[in-house]
Length: 258
Ligand SMILES: Nc1ncnc2c1ncn2[C@@H]1O[C@H](COP(=O)(O)OP(=O)(O)OP(=O)(O)O)[C@@H](O)[C@H]1O
Image (cartoon, rainbow, N blue to C red; front, top):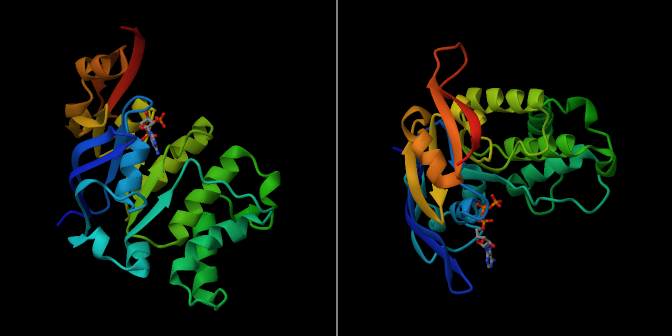
């Protein structure tokens, strides 16, 4: 059974179809890259999958259970969203932001239990911000905040993570560390990405959107052809299979504008 199954999902805004009849599957523990140019509908699709937007049509299921039938706690155990828009206004500590991931698990008036604290510490350690737990949010760099948001998603303990451009603030070392972590974690991950070489290297599968529709879906070696990259992005690219250790898929090199 797929960890995540999306079937025929559509979503419209202002009489325009933004997500158009999208189907995709993610197998348990796999890392799926959601690709496509600016405005192709990646964030909107992730929001539909997470039940933050109500699709006009179609179905989303986690481990075979219809997402719209799950109650708050069950949904929080099924899926965590790490959003590129996520901002934290109040000047709290990094640890407090990560602890927000535990909110769906808590009793209404209860504080953090020892189990919650342990989950928060573990998640901070996994993304390398354990030493920053007491730092004020306003003093953190963009990359530190981004990793803290990921830790919040991990602390939630969901089986499926939805990430919206998780690497846009990260330097190259932290990008590689993040993807090695995501590839190693037992959670199922769907990540909207702009970085094709990164997706090609680490993703088990890529789903490519153009104008809200899926135009390619498969392992990078099958889906990310030069013809597809040129059609979708208007960029010429060379794609080479690689057997190098730690590389799952293919090597993508940009050659120039088409
Ligand atoms: N609430 C809304 N009302 C009207 N249009 C919207 C709304 N949300 C998204 N859109 C439009 O839908 C299209 C897809 O947006 P979306 O953010 O899903 O794309 P994306 O692929 O994530 O883009 P990017 O790579 O630039 O982040 C865009 O043209 C956007 O302006």
